[in-house]
Length: 408
Image (cartoon, rainbow, N blue to C red; front, top):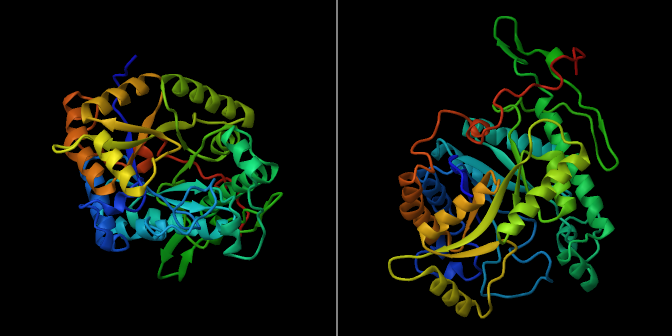
C-alpha cells in the first residue's frame, strides 16, 4: 500500500557520517569536521533539499556504540562538538529548516536545557527542537562525579538487546521524563505577553505574568520561573529515539515525535502498534505521537553503487558496519519506493542517516529529492511557518499558566 500524502523527510547528522570510516572518504573534509563552515555547508545542503529538519547527534562521550565497552581505537573519529552550539551557529545562516540538537538529560540540569533550547528558538526564528537522550553510561557519569551509574554487565547488555532494560536504566528513563516535564513547564513560565518594554513607566516585564512552576518529582525539584521569555513556538518540538517499550513510553509521555528503527514491513506495523500501546499505557492526551523511521543510507553514485561503497568502507574499517536502524544501499529510485511503501503502512515521516555525510547528503539533494518532486511526493518550496507548522503540529500552543494570576 502507498500513500498520496507528501513525505516528511529529515536527516541525522553525525560528524563525517554514520559509518566509522566515513571520515576517510575523499569528500569528507576530515580537517574541517570541527569547523563552522563544515556544519553550515551540511545544513545548507539539507535546506536546499527542503528537508523538514536536521538532528545533530551528541552524547557525553566520544562516538561509540553505547552498548559496547569503550575501546581505544584511533582509526575512527573520537571527538565531538556540542550539538546545541552547532545548531546555534547555523541558525543565523539558515532560514527554513528545523534545527534539533541532541541534549542529554541525567547529567544536564533541565533549567539549562530549557534556557538553551528557548534561546535557539529565538535565534532561529521558531525552528528549534530538542532530541532527548538518556545517559545510562558509567563512563559518562564518571565525567561529572556527582553520581555513580553502574557499568552494564554482559548479561545486562544481552538483556537490553533482547528488549529488557535493567531496573536502574528504567529509573533513568523516569527521571528523564521528569526533566522534559520541567523543561516544558519552564517554557510556559512566561506568558506570551509578559514583556511590556514600556520605557516611560520603566517596566520591562509584568511580574504577574511570570509563574513559579514549583515542580516536585521523585528525582528532580525545580521552582522556576525561567529567565528566558517563552519561546516563539511556545513549545519547541521535542523528539526522542526509541527501540522498545520503556523508551516508547518516555516518548509517549514527553515528546511530539519519536524516531524508530524498523527493518522490514512487518516491523513497521508492529512498532507502530507498540507506540500506540505505549500512548495508552501512559495516558497520553492530545495528538498522537508522530512516528519517523530511521534509515541509514548509502546511495548509488555515477561511479559506484551504494553496496560497493559500503563494502569498501567496511574493508577500510576492518569490520562490518552494524546499526540499530536498517541499512539501505541502492538507487534514489529504490529508496523513494521504500519510503512510499513504508509511509503507506502508517509512518508519519523518515529520518535519513547519511552513511557518509557529504556524499549522501549531496545524493539526497541531487537525486532523491528531484525524483520525489517529479512523483508529486515532496514539496517544491517551504511553507511560511515555524517548525511546528512544518510538521503539522499546532502552532497555537496554550500556556498552561496563563489562567493562573499568581505572580512569581
